[in-house]
Length: 440
Length: 160
Ligand SMILES: Cc1cc2nc3c(=O)[nH]c(=O)nc-3n(C[C@H](O)[C@H](O)[C@H](O)COP(=O)(O)O)c2cc1C
Ligand code: SF4
Ligand code: FES
Image (cartoon, rainbow over all chains, first blue to last red; front, side):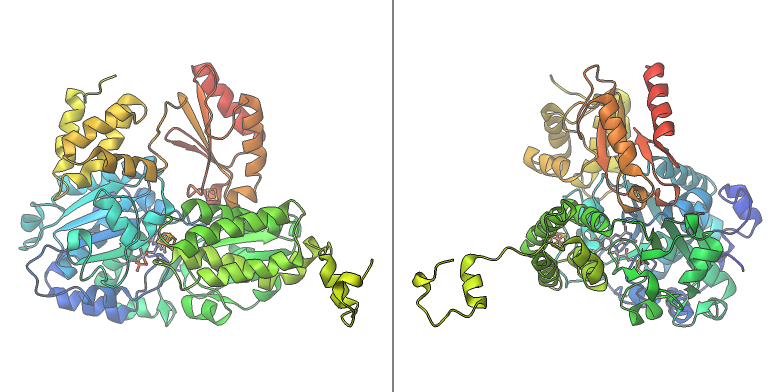
């Protein structure tokens, strides 16, 4: 299988090696065409976002206004803070020039003169690696003023790295823009959408790192070629990140629509000790978990996962074996979202706190079956009632873990609920008597 | 204590300002420069950053407190960040975290008396495929167990 995003070419991160392998010729080809033609090809290729929502990249670009007197911006989302996701860092390290080439093509297509690459602050090493590649690209005239001469085009753009500082919420696109503007990373109410009102109120497009790294190949080899790889409705390859209880965790680039079981057993080497799988989360910790007995025949692409009640997310697959303490895992997930909620919306701020409190009670062995219903109810009250999708991200794992593993969770709360006296009275059907007269 | 940027850092800041259409947008990178120079973000640092970027001190404070990577107190020379999120947890991260806590006898966010180490339990660091991990200042150490984590800490102790 040909790899698109992380090709098996030694030292491809060096600009010279990248050039020797056809690097920056896709950009040259793109600048010979009209921006609309580029957008059209990307639309037809079927490329969908790799940052979580799997939205059509070409369609998103087409939302950018054609006539405006405001500057336009491109933001590349490399915040990569979703637990279970560790793919974008491979691109920064092993194929940074293809990302840079993708950025200049995208910037040209949407008419942006400035692009910001937002990278989580903890990725110090990868920021340095990408900065080195960017400096080289500038020095060779592929970015900045010099690109006019290099490519023989009127177009030029600048690319800057913006370093995050430890806040998961800044991966949400509107929080990301606030963060670049020098504000706290609070998500914005939508609409207006970024294409109308983004960075500094100007038209803005936000795409994930992996999404954009696919673009040069689409321009180079054509949208038809790309559209035939993997699943037709979600074509291309994915950087599947497999972690947890597998023998060979890591990032595997393979076509979309791989069988989950193949990924786990054939590529990631199966489960240590040949244990059974209790639970998997297919797309990063925000996505609904599946039971081990639900994954047979399930394919990894947006549509197939939707059909089994979960979501592709970032294709970060977390595998948990039969000895895993799911209550502890869920409590840890709840702790994460409680910590990362920005606090703007009451259902998210309060709800994440309640869910954590209840789950900690379960971990301590003090939970009741009533708590399980309460968890589901709190989760359901967050969903759809918040400014941004962190609400769903926090609610889904809780709601689906508790409902899909109901037996498991009930085992852990076996203790009977101690009912108040009045209830006992009721259950004994002594209601014919005045309650005060009943003696225990 | 009054805080002023070094000449070298002032030049760095000039470059940073060129990347954004507003001065305010430079606050995060400028805070990083300040933290590198000063070790942490003190009130004096915030005052200086605010006046430099022409924004109210409160707003700078708002940014500093929103993001976890700006330290509001001096940290240890080696700041240990242990990820305990799911992928790491499944591969023994809490054993490592608890071990370090006991070994250094500090709580989450604490600094050892000699100020050599500080400890922080952190969220997913993007090392899930090479879990468990700890980061020491800016460097990641991956595929760990308690023994290897211990060796890492010892080696930093000896370096000191
Ligand atoms: C809480 C939250 C965190 C997110 N984190 C990321 C992230 O780290 N990286 C990313 O690319 N998208 C992230 N997203 C999705 C972005 O908002 C946005 O949809 C995406 O960057 C668009 O790029 P794409 O269309 O190329 O996928 C996050 C969304 C939410 C709600
Ligand atoms: S849903 Fe949560 S994270 Fe998103 S804006 Fe509301 S409070 Fe903030
Ligand atoms: S869970 Fe620890 S690095 Fe991702």
